[in-house]
Length: 431
Image 1: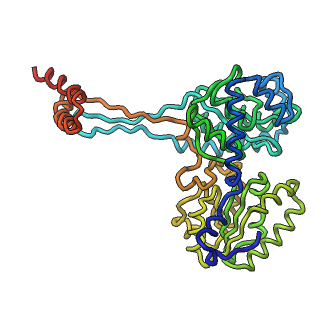
Image 2: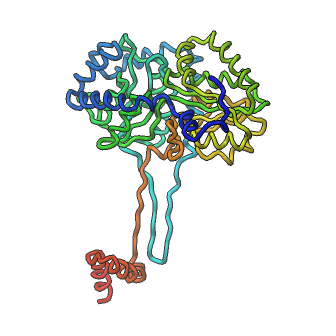
């Protein structure tokens, strides 16, 4: 992670410095994903079993998790483990309950009432990453808001291990959220199964959850014709803005907490001095030496960046341009910078707020936009699991008052049938 002075970079060099690793392989990824989606669409469960055997090394007789497997998962966790899950569940639930929308009812003029009401999305598909790091926390982040929203059908897919089993942590988390439809499926094939439906997997109206570049590409492809998606949530990323008051050990720990997700993750440090950057480099080396996933984190660090900013304003400019999934402000007065931050999935203020809190148990949702999508997308919330509908009702008196206005406007647009829908009613009221 060689430090680069931001002011010294050309416009094209700045763009290159902030490019995500996964984006460079996007064309090849798109071709592979398209092939997998086609296989599942044609072959259903049989294709899913074949793809799972090939990529996950698991030969499955049943794709669905059985009740016996749920029961075994409960027994596999200690009371302390289950208590930790319940604490995280309670905090996430509390924060998302506060997001419940209020019904809107407005009389825009006498006799004309307009309303806005919410309904749950009927069938939702929840993707929980697995593999080398089963993210049971994602089961909570998706399960809690879908539970509060009241979606009647909730399908959860997560990759099995080579033994064909699912992490007991994921199953216990799913059960906490009242989810019973859990399938041993990962990658693009899981997204295909939920988007198209198979003999075993119910077809879903909207898909949720983060994943690697293949999962993200699959979500984007199916969203064009078969299912809505929450947001592009791909390989994890974090940006840390650090001033001279920041603890280098804290900075390094925060960078590594995201780098260990996978080799296609990206971490970026924005600092105001080469001295701080050098101390962070030393801490990274020391902490990497004791990390079980150090090899993965090292690969991610090869594609990561240290940018030297001239001022807090320039650091904010870099952050808003990059639009990170996670932004950590390890500066003396982080709240002073917060109003200037306009593009980030989630912001973490100060030395005592590691990004890990948001990943697990503070209450906010950790399903966040990556690839710079934070410029236009928000992190996951309760509203993503709901649809809103507007309702209107006119009384005869209201129609008499507003009808002539609509007749004139419809005539101006040359939509005569629109005008007549009003006119025939006004004529009847005039009799």
